[in-house]
Amino acid sequence: MALFSGFTTRTASHRLRQIVPLCALSLLTLPVQAEPTGKVDCIAPAQPGGGWDFTCRSVARTLQDLDLIPAAMQTTNVPGASGGVAYSHVRAKRATDDDLIVAASTATTTQLALGNYPGGDPDNIRWAATLGADYGVIAVPANSPYDSLSALLASLETDPASVTFAGGDVAGGFDHIKVLMAARESGVDALREIKYLAFDSGSVAITQLLGNHIDAFTGDLSEAKSFVDSGDIRLLAVFSEERLPGELAAIPTAREQGIDVVAPNWRGFYTAPSASEESYQWWVDTLDTLYDSEAWQTVMTQNGLLPFHKSGEELTRFVDQQIADIRDIGGELGMLR
Image (cartoon, rainbow, N blue to C red; front, side, top):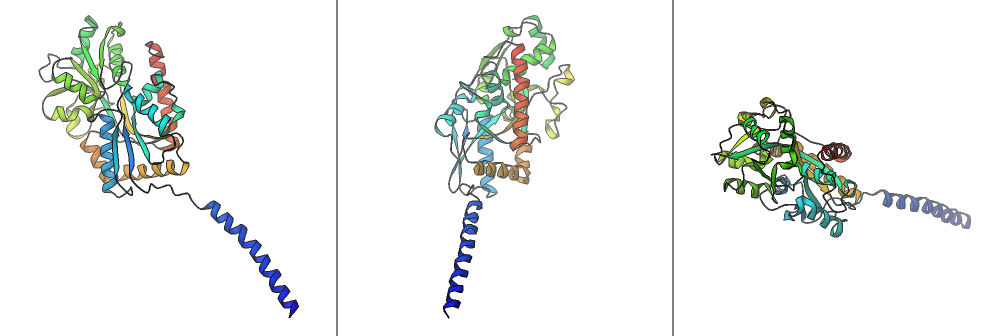
């Protein structure tokens, strides 16, 4: 009996020693809860009405409609310095926030490339996903004397200061660079004499255009489309490889007017630099699912966005190359800080 009892005790102890490490291992390998449990926040680094604001609000609405987030997503506008204020705010105050995404675009990478964000380093944030591309445009008021991009650029060849441009980006930003690239391609030498006024968003720049305070708007199709539909402005050119599909096919490309410039502006998001790996992957996966949905494809079509999707490491590599390319252009034009 004692032998049997001893055997039972030793066997139970042996089994217990086996079970405890297995339980500990199980606890170590359980996935950390990555999905937000409450309201999430999308920062639009500009005033309401611009491209970044559109990105946050349209994505928030579609995520909620598809039940891809557990609660509402609110849009917080943090304007200033073409995204620089929002960039600094996230790094300084929300660096570990798992429940945050920030709208970004080629304008963001341009500012980082040219050194326009104080202490800005592309490695200080994490690129999550792109959800389409918005091609650059040049627009004028409906009553403008310029009826083509070629005619407008001809004026610059005669007098580089004869046309005043405006966009929702700082001087030296991507909106500005689009004009300089087109002017250089047209044969304008005195690029620094071209007038460019910077505003906090594309909508503000278009308001100035409608008030006849400037001659031409340089921005993206999504910012200008509603004003084109209302007949208030005309598009002289779109910076795409070829004409866009559907009703947008009426817009001539810069290429077909002899200006070989292509300027896509991707729309997407970055996350807080020190957020958890689990939350970062959740955002990547969720935005991948959103992009593949029929609902988001409809949003893209309605707003002139063309297919363009990269996420995670693939997007990081793409952004690194884009930043390198913009630095090359900025260096040639003396824009690097």
